[in-house]
Length: 376
Image (cartoon, rainbow, N blue to C red; front, side):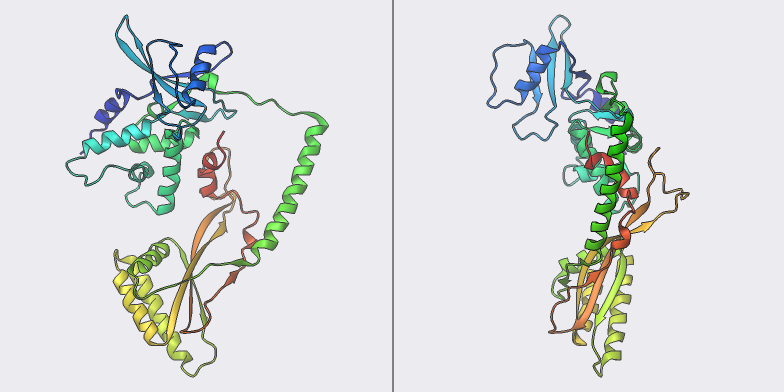
């Protein structure tokens, strides 16, 4: 059992954990110079400020935000060390907080050390993302979304406070353990007034309509990339099972009018039944491979591909408002497409009509990922 209170204490006392934030303001010439020099390579030390040690960036390609740097400062009179996160970043979103650089990386290290006797490998960001979902068996999409949030947090980017509250709670932390909420980080955007703003709104509306029509034309003939399901490839079978677990199944056949058409349809039906059965039972790729062998024996082969559909949500749906002030119009629905055809025929290249998905944005997933795709 991992003691949450101990993890919190070890995180806050770590020698590289940022304890203070220094948002650059007018007159902060020395800190501004230090931030600039932190990203200069090779580094030069001319004694600009004594008793400072640069912790991040560690290298020219350090993944943290280039608007930030982390220094350790020592107050010699009291022999105390402070870790300061210097940043020039600001945001216009009052509901956002700034991630503490390296906090998630430190948490991974502490958790790895704590679980060392039981864990075979170090704790990864994906492992932390699984914990952050708060679910016993999270789906891959949810883990991927949370891992991106955690990565942004660790790099010292802005993240929505509502989302971070859930993540921090699931990890056993307070929001302040993982982020900074400082008044000087917020920069109110000027309000636009008058006819110029109205003209821009009209132009933007017309442009959106043109873009939507172009998107509808393009999505009416969305081509799905297909791969042959090889009966000698357990990896391919496992991949299909992972897709099938969280996807809607769509099947197509290309059999023509052969005399054995009914028998082949029965073989396909047995294969689909075996696929659905294998999805319900973990690590059952062997079941799928046997079913595929029977399908091949009947003179058929299977191809698979996947794409994303969108399902509309009514405005009054409890799932529609996933973030205060933002309304989701749909949710993403992965689709696993299977095409069955006679052995030796030309590989399939199916086309699906996805024009109905235009205008169904934002999706629930896009709202959860909004801060990731559009950083402040």
